[in-house]
Length: 63
Image (cartoon, rainbow, N blue to C red; front, top):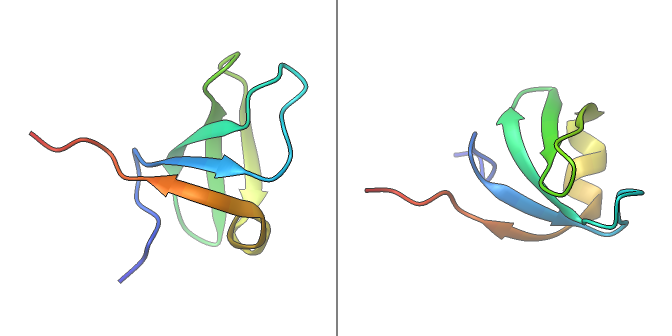
């Protein structure tokens, strides 16, 4: 079972240049697509880097 799921919010070690360090997961796999919650910028990043730099995972809200 993966600990990362689409819709989760992760807090990474380093801040984005806009000042936010929280990212929403849009895609999981060998690479992740993350969206900055501060400015909305999207990036593709290797799973290995996400796993290494994650400080906290907030699971998405379920109804």
